[in-house]
Structure formats: C-alpha cells, structure tokens
Length: 151
Ligand code: DQA
Image (cartoon, rainbow, N blue to C red; front, side, top):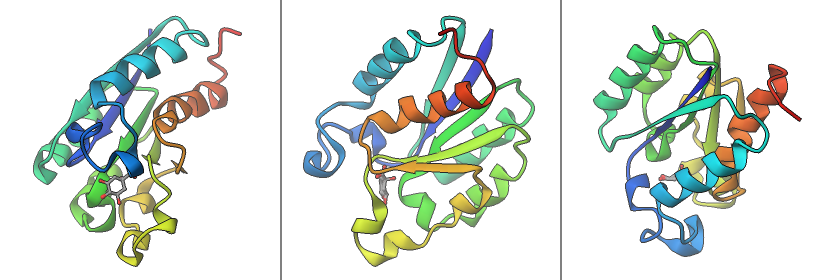
C-alpha cells in the first residue's frame, strides 16, 4: 500500500466560502473526494491521509510525526505560512521523502508579500495556479516519478 500525506494550512478549511473567485467554489472536503476519485484511476492501491490545521505548531508537529512515518511523499499547501514560517521550513527539512508544495492560486500574480516563499526552500517541487487540480497533480507527479502508475 502506497501512502501519501496531504497537509493544508490556515483558512483552507474555509475553501468554497473564502474568496471563491481566487480559490474556487469547492470545499476542502469536496476537493478531497474529487482528488481521491481521480487519482485512483491511475493507481488503485493508494492511501491518502489528509490533515488541516490553522495553527503553525500543529502543522510543525504533524510534519515531525510524518518524518517517522512511511509515506511516499508529502504534498503541502502551507497557505499563508508559506510566506512567513521558518518553523515549518525547518520541520520540512526532517522529511526524507519527496515534498511537493502546492498553491491553488498563482501567488506570483498576486500581492508582493506572497512572492516571499520560505517553506518552498524545503520542497522538491512546486505546483501552483491550477486551482483544485494542484492536489491531484502533486500526487500524480510523485506517482510518475516513482513509477507507481497502474496505467
Ligand atoms: C494559498 C496562497 C497563499 O498566499 C494564501 O495565504 C492562502 C492560499 C493558495 O493555495 O493559493 O491561504 O496557499
């Protein structure tokens, strides 16, 4: 069984309600269902753990735990913490498997404070600006890299 971890940071629990013109109309729960259904077409034996927190320390602790867990990859949308969190940057350095940072919006099209990217310095890849598809694409990129596709 291949396991992936997806971590979502602050305010992503309000997807669907929060600035839908920027982030789309799907809730995080709906994105989860959508992503899992789509990814299983490409790899059946896949387990995905989803974690969301609005608290920096809880995200750090989940990353610390994940460093001792058997995941194939970590897909993380640190949300606003991408631009500010040295603590999450440092925690991500503990992860020995691949880390893909994702953002629903293209942060380079937006305010200049979103161009500062701290956590991305600990990521192997970044996917952004493709709305809800970034979660699917984050997982898919790792299935391709590790040759885990069923098709
Ligand atoms: C975001 C972009 C961040 O700048 C913002 O603070 C978010 C969401 C995105 O997915 O586009 O909360 O990470």
